[in-house]
Image: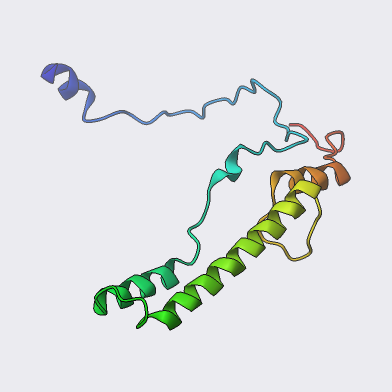
Length: 125
């Protein structure tokens, strides 16, 4: 094996000529998006929860001393739940909200139906 690597050099040799591209499937976008990737959830009120736990640890787990932190955490959680309900209702209805950064798959499919791709105008080389 050593003799073989000594004759060829170390590692793989780079390919000298460009590799021709062989198109197996047509390079087209699908007219819809699946909803499989929407399963990622972000933790809600993580900072407020850590503040509550730090306060409880400092005060020997007495809730009376940390009432302000607990109320802030509860307020944050209720706001998160209402936002979550609104987004879920909009996603189920398929309503498009202007300025929304994250859209559900139903909303993206609705946009793709409004503006279908035009494959005839694309030139193929």
